[in-house]
Length: 309
Length: 292
Image (cartoon, rainbow over all chains, first blue to last red; front, side, top):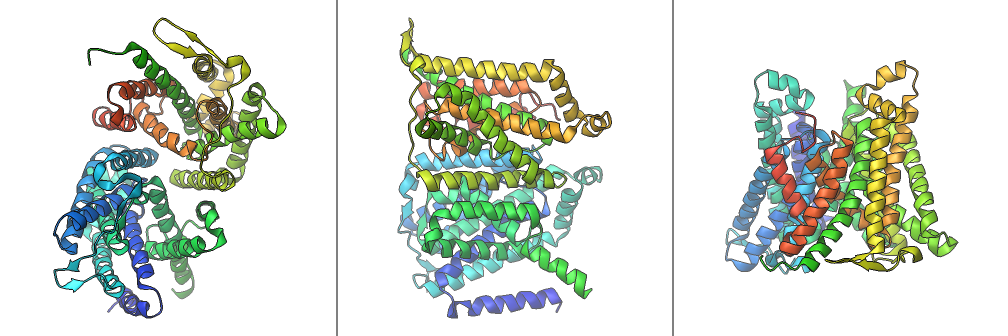
């Protein structure tokens, strides 16, 4: 067992025990956003592409899953699977268009496409517009496990998260992932080595979109709600912030970042500072960009490198 | 389709031209800043909103009228921009440009959040100046004076900016700085100063647009973010290769939006994004883009 595997096992045990001290719905929320941020980071951290439109995938997963849970007899895992597939399909379309442009243009194209999706959901009748889809039933996973209990729901979410995290881990450490990193570090060289750069970017985009939709689908079940908040550009900004705080380009960073931001939001929205939440998020953004670019996990890794090796 | 109501059609065209004027002013500011700094200023929308609010507050508490605001507000907003560039953006100028984008995004959140906190999210109204009230009945439409003024003033400012950049010595410095800042510095020209002033000017255009917008749109904290994303799509459509291109695309897309409002209103919020998709498919570099 390598050190990394030991660490992962330790974290898994921690996640299994966590509900004994913390509220399961809160933990499930953290895991959903952690998966969302990990999916986003696959693009930013390992391909160097800044997507400003990931809310579109989170929201699509959520709406499709919610719609199916309300209107069809599908079991939750099948509804989630369909939501994920819908996110992947949308990602395939977005990706085809967005990889035509680089850097800042990539960010603007994804933002604009996500806004297009936002307006479509705003007008489409099945989303209930501003009110959102409320009272989504959680159903019984595989027709056996009743998810209405919050603790059961949490372990269901944990299983999904572990699966998503594993997919990302495998992707990053595969030969495919090596090519992605080569593209990130020097795109021209990757091209000159004969790789079809845009194709690799596109595949990474689809994987990232699918996992973001998986997170959105799961989140809808947890909160029994799918709303426009999840497709709004603020959400695309939030996931960037989570990744940035945790550490861009580290596999575990986005998880820490998501935990940090979700905790902060929960804490603030209860108190009188709730009105300042966007200002505080903006300040955290500015501080991170100005003087904390490697994020929490990035800093820890640097500290470990400097002192223990 | 055949019984076209000319009155309504021209009405929507006018609305389109007005929206287009704001698109043009904002994308022009973005293009100028992008030329020298290679960053997209995400706070451009927030600064446009700031401009509208300064005009509103100046009138309410200090009695500064619209005409004075047209001069004072862009200067104030430009100063805010200069401070932003000097103390926040410059320290990370050598990092990946995506970081500057994220920095301006954070600043936009702060500015928008602060105004939402202070004024709530409902809109405030700003009276049309006395001199521009009323309007003229043309053969095919009614043209309110203030709306005509928006189009004339915006086109004049856009053209003036284009002329300054393309035809004057100052503009030549700017263009040289875009091409090769190191070489220009070697010739003894203070490039960092030019960068700061350019940023200030690009941002001042947003402030100017904000004052112009105050009497026609309601002054509200999210007025900037809504328009900015549309402007981003317009920038992608036009490409940022040319100043003239930014202006023409802005006006043109406003007209496209206006026509859509007449012929198929359901699509009016999405049409510009759809045009962006088509342009990306057919001419990925944008209509006026230079890159491959």
